[in-house]
Length: 382
Image 1 (spheres, rainbow, N blue to C red):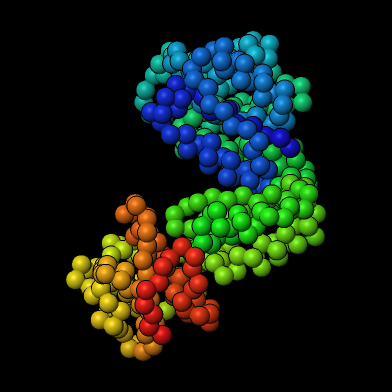
Image 2 (spheres, rainbow, N blue to C red; image 1 turned 45 degrees about the vertical axis):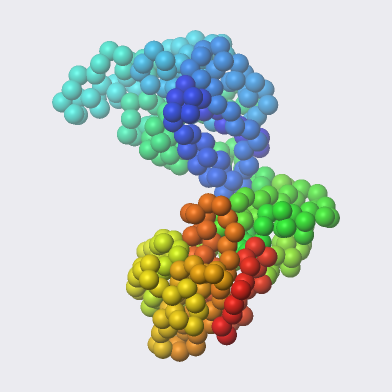
């Protein structure tokens, strides 16, 4: 099922507003097994909107159009759809009554301009908007169904979940176009991963995608109509290669996966050079005690230790680098690392996850000190 997204509005084209709706929608659809093939943004120009709608309708089975359904003169999406598909605007009295009732429930009279939101392309199907005055609608053009929604994120997301997803599932039937599996690595660069993984082709219908999200590299194994056997074989090959740097898989954040391994045990954090980045990763863990100090030592042998429970300590930077230490019931293991990154915030994130990965390795019974390719190690304590 080919899907395209059209976002509308001068405020998006000019960069005054960030188009979070399209990103959210693309990710949501991918979770359902449908990968969006194209996303475009069009300003508030009637001819440009008409052309974009017609072009997408010729290519895609499903077109999702967001924005431009308000009551003002620059909201042109409904008119563009009417002209693009030769379906003149017509009054939908039921939706006009709905708008009037919503204003009346607040003790107000509906402004005349809101009546515009009840004029939709003929023969279109309305999509209920339970919280706003702009209903969505569906237009059929040849083999394409075009779904139109308002751009207000709260209204848009509710309508997608409640109105559009059920229709797309019916349209797709049992067909799953795309299967997505996510894996996360730490301590290896994107280019190094590419050297390891892209030398040989993947099976037909299998694609490997990369996304850098400091301090991790996310790998997306995407199957486009591939067989279960081919996907399983591709996953085995991927995991066999990235195992030394694998820190998580699936849809939840790796930091949350690591904290889940604690099974409710208390954890203490001592932070210096990381400046609270480790606490940010662990935020929300119920049995967390965290302390920050610029006076923590710059040498492993001088970092505070804990004889009971679990403690992660990140000292301040010294001549050899930044000391990181895990204390686990009286056993103290540490490393001093050098992080060469020009961005201070990214450096803090790298230090924080390096410490958290020490905890992950300990909880899984693996060697606590990983073999990283992107971190220079100056000293060890094991």
